[in-house]
Image: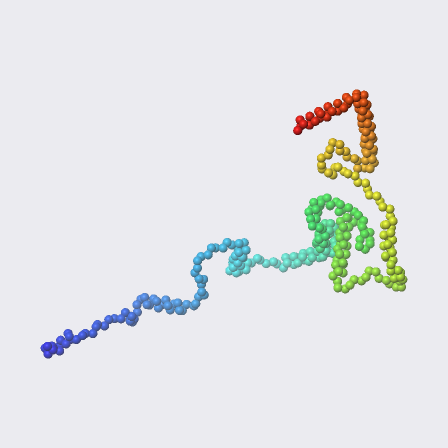
Length: 334
């Protein structure tokens, strides 16, 4: 059978190779429009300088309410920014004549201030009486001496003390001279002396050097106390003896005062006088009334006894009847 086959038909009986398929992964050498756009975009990204990392995207936070300080800082920042953008503001210039005139006025005012501070200016020139300089140091010192709550009192009594401070008085200054001035000047000088004394005491207390003793002996002196060391003890003993021998003063008579007590008083209550003389007279009067009452009661008792003696047993019956009536009355009350 094989002999009958021709060489031309051999391809019909041989296994043929599978047809070659085009691989999908093989890149195409022909550029496409999409690849060209990607290449251009990538080259642009590579040539761009790196940018700082931006804030990470997160959930939107609730806005914080601005306070007065934040608003003030924001306005100031905006003002500075506008000033830098627009340049310095031109406020104009001042000529030399105006500057020289202002300088002369300032020098004149400084000279007047120094004169007012020294107290060389008179009232007519603008001294203390015509609205001169206020001594703030002295005013602060004087206000420091006032106790708490004195400001309100001074405000209440400001109108009342104005004319009293202008009263003319005579006083002695720190140098022993007799001067005449207002009461306010006298008080001011006394306060200044007290402040000076207090300041000197504070300096002595805070100083590291010990103060000089006040009682010093200069020259030849006989110290009699050295020969009699018990002199002070004798003086104290004499004072005690005088107090012991002194006659005792009787205490003042103190009597009961019903007005100082709040309580119910009976019908027969009687308040004696707190004065010794009036009290004695009232007690004598009451004693006389008592004697009269006792005398009259004795006479009545004597008359009843005589009547009982005359009537025989009538008095006993009357007493028994009265007692019985009293018992019946009490039983009725129960």
